[in-house]
Structure formats: structure tokens, C-alpha cells
Image 1 (spheres, helix red, strand yellow):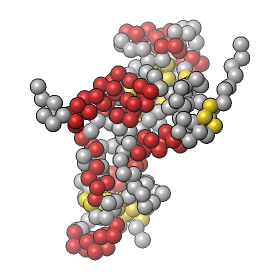
Image 2 (tube, chains in turn green, yellow, brown):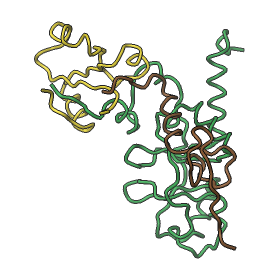
Image 3 (cartoon, chains in turn green, cyan, red):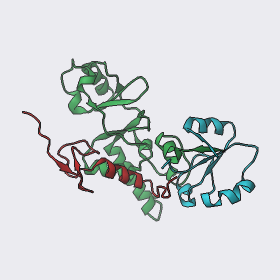
Image 4 (spheres, helix red, strand yellow):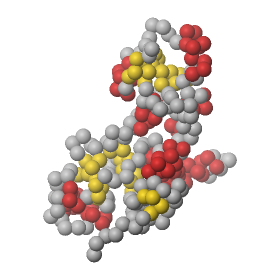
Amino acid sequence: MYDYEDGKLDWLAAGLPSEGTNAERPRAGDVARKDVPTCRLDERLGDVRDRVREAGWDACVVLNEERVVFGLLRSKELETNPDRRIEEAMRPGPSTFRPFVSIEEMAAFMIEHDLDSSPITTSDGRLVGLLRRQDAAKAALELHEREHHSDGGKA
Amino acid sequence: MPQPIDRDEVRRLVDRGAQLVEVLPPNEYEEDHLPGAISMPLRRLEKEARSSLDRGRPVVVYCWDSA
Amino acid sequence: MSEQQVAMACAKCESSIDRCEFCEELGCGTPICYQCLAEALRQAMAHPHQHGG
């Protein structure tokens, strides 16, 4: 017999799939955008800014080779001196959240704190995606409508 | 005494046919459990293990965390 | 102009904090400490295990 000592919390924090009623409700990791632009510490800010804009985004996550999150660039950081290296320009060590956090909680916090976006990471710091406030709010609202309308929300 | 293992080892054992057993209360199991895990709350583990588990396959038990 | 750190208190437990742990802003209107935030987000999972493993 074996004992998985770190348990279910460790499994979920690693972004691994689960079964059960919660698994059917959207969570932060499900709604986070996986196509968020990413960059490395040693890149030039101007080059990254051009790439981010071309992709239609206003944020970029700074990763190392193992996809561990080192920092974040939002509009404010992207608009600074283009010759700076990413390492100097970024917001280091941003607050990150686990994939299993409920989308309702994330939406509520992001609205209350006026936070545009937040990286969602596994327990070892690897990027799952970037959760945007508008996506979190939309998903939370859709979930609320699905669960609180007796006709199942059908037209 | 069960042998402690980590997440990677859980996945390896499950790939090789191990049985996953969650020992938390049933309502917690219903909300979230590892794929393929069965529910066997701690107070019933001793009584039900012999009848419900396949002795020929390894068994991995887990709880919420290590606290 | 040098930055001055203003003492903030967690809106939930009133413990002293340097910044809001959710949005990282110094001037957040409803700052929250790390422990209260972790508790709130874990509670959002519903029924975190009580009896300690």
C-alpha cells in the first residue's frame, strides 16, 4: 500500500485533471488564456512590445526555459524605454493563483481590486495561462445564470 | 505501514494498474477526486478494504494534504 | 520624489501589511493579507478537509 501524502490539494494545485461535481464548474485554470504572449528575461522590451501588440494583447508573461513565471508586463511596463531588458522593465514575482481556484472567487476579487489580469500557475510556478478580468467575470456570470435559472438558461 | 509517494509516482503506479482510494468524507469525494479513484472514508477503510479492493494490484490512498 | 510606504491593515483580520496580496497595490481600498487570501480562495473549493490528513 502507498500513501500519496501531499494529497488531493497537491494534485489539483499541479493543474492535473479531476472528476466530480467541481470538475464540471469552470475554474481559474479553465478560463485562463493559454495563448498569452510570453518572453524571456534577456529580451529587449521594444521587441517584445511589438510582438505583444501584433498578437492583439496588452500583457506578457516573463518565463524561464521551464515555463516558470518570473514576472509580468502590463501596459504600464510595456510603454517604458524600449531598449531596456525585460528583467529591468517587468513587475517581478507577481501574485499568482492556482488552477483550481473557483472562477467566481477570482472574478469577485479581480473586480473588487480592479486587477486586469493575473497569471495562473501550478504549485511549482509553471504558467498555465493568464486570467483576464473580463473573461473571469463573463465565466462567473454564465455559471451563475446556468445554476440559478430553473429553465437551465434555455431561450 | 504505507510507503509515502509523490505525485509522479502516483501517476506511474496508476499507469501500471494501481487502485486509487480517497479516504475523505463522501461529500468531499463527490466534489473532486483523482480520476478513477474510489471513495473509502477512513473509518470504513479497514472494514471494506478486503472486500472492495483487488489484492493483486497496488493500492494508493490519499487525503486532502499532508497536514 | 521618494516613495513612502504607508502602513496598511488587512480588511479582514486587520493585521499590518505592506501591500495588498491580491493586487499588489499600495493604495488598494480593500487590502488583504496572504493568510486571509489563501483562506478565502481555499474556502472557494468548498469543504476543505477538516480532520488533518
